[in-house]
Image (cartoon, rainbow, N blue to C red; front, side, top):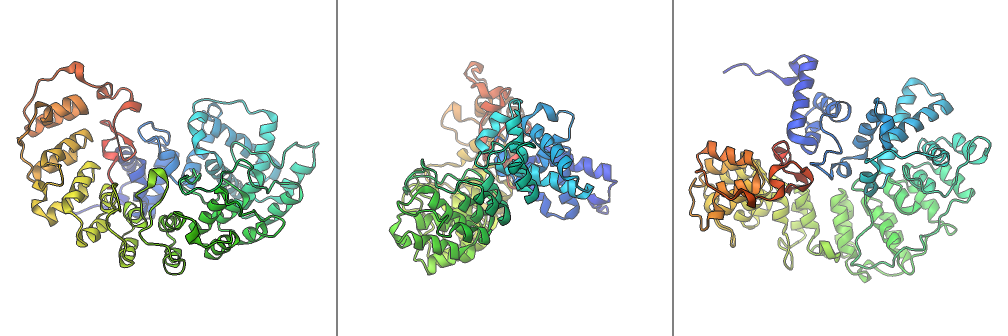
Length: 540
């Protein structure tokens, strides 16, 4: 056997080239996970994503990635773009460039402080911009008028916590004209920015100069069937919602205490969606005393609000607040089997959330509290969520508690999780030919073909799925499915494996077959599947 060589041992340009090729091959989602390998990998992966930008954050193959990646990463990408020759041709980089230049002129920072200010401002834009406006903003360049530019600078000064600069901008009308209650498109409302960033001195200053603390007059009464209006997946330092919610999401207890003083305190009656979202923010940030305080302000126990306990339990699971999760179960009497009453999430329990996210320890804890492994009515079960996410340890726990292994295998194949499918076959050699409900082994190959997953197709054959299974109809033949519903390159791959060629009516092929218009091709786990991207789907 030859001697193994660590990748880091290669010359820096070679190592960088290897990592860049890797990122292109596996996509941003999987590449970000590799940051956990070691410090060298972390730095090189970040360079490939943020500096080289070998895979675009706005790649149409992954339309949700710009929402899913952390604001720090999104901000780093935007900052590099703001320093490129094309910065003035794109709206967000152009805004970041103009703000950073002017803030540099006003503050005269050291080189080290300048770089830090640029990073903070870019990240603030990344988290402050409403995600639903990202697509529209990036399509073209918008002219920034003088008033908007002034407001941008005012918000940037707040982001940086520079109270003297904030005062000069608000009070010296000869220098610049800004509005204390303007909702800035790129950063958010001034008071919420200060609350989210933890700048209590600026919060007090803005309040003394007329910052609006009142609730939104259009805020809806809370209803268990309404979805939360938290658009950001990552809410840290987000100026979204009310000042109180922004402070709680940022974990700033001093500001939250200030905003709960009588002169600023929001009214809990009638219970509004924003007040509930502030309760949720307290749970997400691990601020149990504030959660208790807000619930007490309503004058009713948590049990009087149907569905809210289950909603909070899931939020505690999702945001790694195991302590609050236990308090909700043990002290507040939340049913561990509570499910959301939101119309689109009616079957999703805390266990399902933990399983989907691969939180094996939490899965064990919840099972210890007596949670049911199956939803009370039709819908995805925790095993399905764990298997589709490729979370081997969570799948193992659920299987050890009696969940059907054939279902786990089906979901692993369906979502392209080859590593999990291999693990299941190693543990249960006969699983390849086992049925689950109406699913037959032939359906496994069909799933792999539809997902254009070459590794899964080859693995199923290696694992023992017959090359020529008993197909009922001509349309079920693997080659026919490849030629009509997948792509030509998938069909060619089947030929190399020994599948028999089949004639088809090419006029019956759907528009997405050619993969020319990537916005119309089939998707799996948020990735639009093409020859370039099919390997971006799996966990590993």
